[in-house]
Length: 431
Image (cartoon, rainbow, N blue to C red; front, side, top):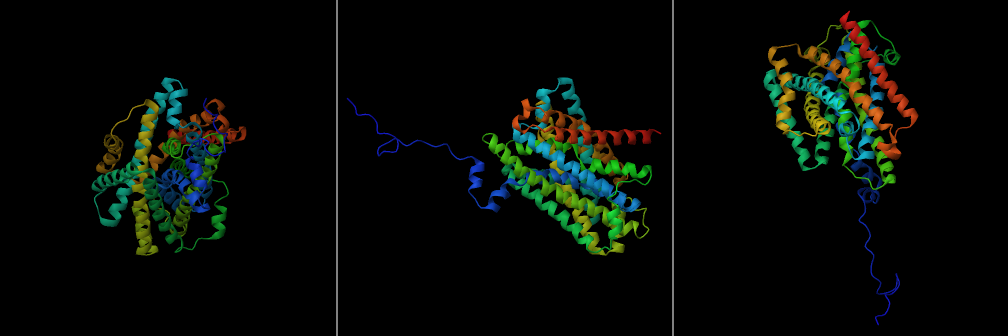
């Protein structure tokens, strides 16, 4: 008769294999800095769309024409963006799916196809802003013809996206580096201006200065709250760090809020700085007719010197390169999520960049096309935002991370405000 096995803990007891630690548990064992830094990144990829060339166009036009009047619009749009990107990041963490995938699973099929169709049109409007902006920057810096500069932008976007094949972290760091160039460019210029502090403070009091300022306000919102990154951010968080259980999901969500706060705070600072510089340099000197990026570059050189003009052009170039690669990534997420189809990224890039190259080739005013593209983007925001609000309030989808009633009410109010602005803009345009 065989003797009974020794009790646990006694010599000779069989060792019990423990499950391997989760990624969050591994990070928790590190120091405070090494624990937090790997969590940051997705919001910076999303935030680059909030400082794309469309923002340059609308902020310059707003500051030159109306001074500091529209600063409150930038602040409001940035606060909206923080809320929206937090909700989008939460989708990926709570469900392991992205927003287009959830739309396909929980919305009627005709609505899914409608959402996909308008999202593709929005992608083309996004590419228009990004390609035109980068092409203008290359033209200003090196005299490159606009059409050739557009082709160069496409090639650079492919190169940045190729980093993702070698790990998401390299792609994120490349985007962070380009955002740093944008930030440093405008910080350099803001140190060379003399803005009136009182006028800047009054600019944060809500108000308009005629119908033209309303048009630009809608354009600023369209340039800030970008529809394609509402879809994208949920994809950036869905598989980046897989949480094990409800507690890890809540902890991961706290880190993502920090990520969004830092990234969107930087984007908001850049946008506010853009308008303040345009108001102080152009509106303050009587050059209220500066409505183009090329004109702004020329006035920077005349009024502030060649260093300021170079900083502006480099920031614009970094913005165009980074946002064009992020836009292509978002397009892949949209198509694969809504209709479960995937096309080669080269084909996708060529299709969405074609309208931008046509606009450049026919000689349409680049800055005017940028402003119009941002208004088009503003009309696309509700199609991404309303499904986001409706789906994130459902406990059967989001589990314990479903929106609270207050969050749903505020997000619904944001969607309603944007729709109201767009209806007003449509009425002004038709009449």
